[in-house]
Length: 207
Image (spheres, rainbow, N blue to C red):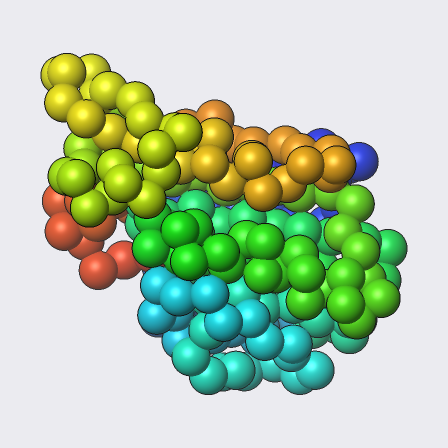
């Protein structure tokens, strides 16, 4: 488990050692107990888009890639295995965006920020969870064209995109903290691109 600094708000990012918290209810109960939060979380059916929903109670909130809540005792969660979880928090609300290249290019990060702000909960801090780094994120022209200002190279010299750089560009004015890790080549993460795993890590935030 990774916890951000205290100034960044109340959130946590799981590691592979914590298990797949979607399917393993015992692992989720243990993880939640360590954080002192409810075992039941609000979550979405992630579709790599830009839809954002507000959760007022735990459980499945339907197809979306951004979720936020202003309800105490209702943790919100996103699940990843190379994509980035982007947490945003104000004093009165907390949200998370699921930002792979499709979601990031569709605007899910700015969409979450706007949805919270429009409801009177302007985010003040943002946290970027672990995800695939430009060192390993080999991409074709389709993806390069989506991020012309964030092009990079893999460690083996092929075209890649720096998604953290692209995401950070959507967070201007917020205080930002990031987990500096690549899920594909680093130790302790689930990576779908690395080995095709169906398992996922969790990003959880709460009030």
